[in-house]
Amino acid sequence: MIRQLEVDGVPTLLAPVSGPMHAGLVFRVGLADETPARRGITHLVEHLVLPGPAQVSSHLNSRTGIEHTYFHVQGSAERITGFLAEVCAALRRLPVDRLDGEKEILRSEAEGRVSDPLPMRRHGARDFGMPSYPEWGLDGLAAEHLHEWIARYFTRDNAALWVAGDELPEGLALDLPDGARQPAPAPSSALAQTPAAFTGAGERAAWDTVVRREARAAVFANVLERQLDRDLCRRSAIAAAVRTEYQPRAARTARITAFAEPLAGHRDAALGGLVDALAALQAGRVEADDVTTVVELTCDGLREAEERGGRLPGQAFNVLAGLSVRGLDDAIAEVRAVTAAEVAEVATAAYGAGLLMTPAGTHAGWAGYPVTPAESVPVSAGRVRRARGDRKLRLVHGDEGVSVVAGETVRTVRYDACAALLAWPDGARELIGDDGITVRVEPTLFRDGAVVTAEIDAHVPAAHRITMPAREPGSIPAPRRRLWAGTLVRPD
Image (cartoon, rainbow, N blue to C red; front, top):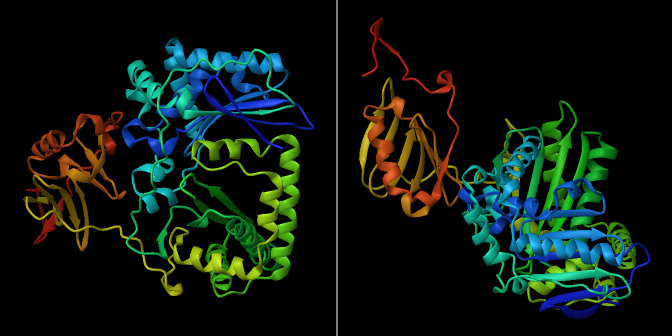
């Protein structure tokens, strides 16, 4: 049974476990609190606070998530009190001498990370869309930025503690600075309508949705995985793997994702299988046996998690969200009450809010999925510049923002909705709108392109600017040379 206590003003959850004693200190801050120009700041603080040699230990670890950052330790009572004391001390006196080294470690980690474009497509370049973006902020982060971030988010009033053990360790203390509880950002939306679809860059087919946070939604996610495994892996052998995830959020919603990794030559079939499975569940074709199996497995998992303290982190997150702590019996009772009809209701709501990513070179128009908006309305006032050597490419710029018109396609970022500006030393600029739409301006392609660069720089606040590394000369676009009446003409 979970007991609610307090340690030095920090709400604390305590529960006995059958295995090793462990504890975690969590703060209500994560990727959703960052901006593109500060992307990576929470992760960098996390790395600096965790003692360097301990980062490879299976008994000491930390993690930066979407809404929370935590530090976890397993071991004796003395080890727990010592580790948490080190974490608090590091937050008060950040080891900035390790700053450059930790930045390099984070850059190395990023090299093998595969980006998920679904968050950006759904939310844009803000709050819950941030996981789609690289840690662009690392180069520009200095000690003062980290200290400001810690003062706002890593405080006793924005923290919770869980301890898996019979009693609180003797001498446990949390010497954290005072602050204020920080609410989780409200999820934004960059989608004009749902369901919707967009074309990805790889072979994977994927889907996500946002639903109410409740037990029947979690059951639906697992029923969907069983359906996909049966249809795509066992019956048809068109996918190498399928997976679904249920991610609860502080705002009483949950994100559900589904992924299908097609076997070679089967990406169209895997996409079709994913679309068909979603449509079947949305139409109410839910296998009662699947629901019964998932309910039993979920209840078994809850009991196992209770025994080893695995439910404590989630309950600590609830405390930070102002939600009540739920006992095991209540959690199991809610899961056991889920019926096939309720799963079908969730499937209908999930389908209606769904966003589908199709493999490269494919689309889902045949299934009735409208394409997510990748275009914009051009700025209403500004100067029009035609590209040198390409009359179909136009640039419109003025006090409102910048538009690039390529044939029938228009992409616009307004200055009052510009989330970030990528700036290259050669003068190239890329504006990223709050909605995730980007506009790339290559000054070499337009007459007086440097004037446009200067104008953009003057309109976008310095805090939104992200300095990019120099490009190889051969990668900088050159004006297209065109033929007219059989004569090679120099671009105008």
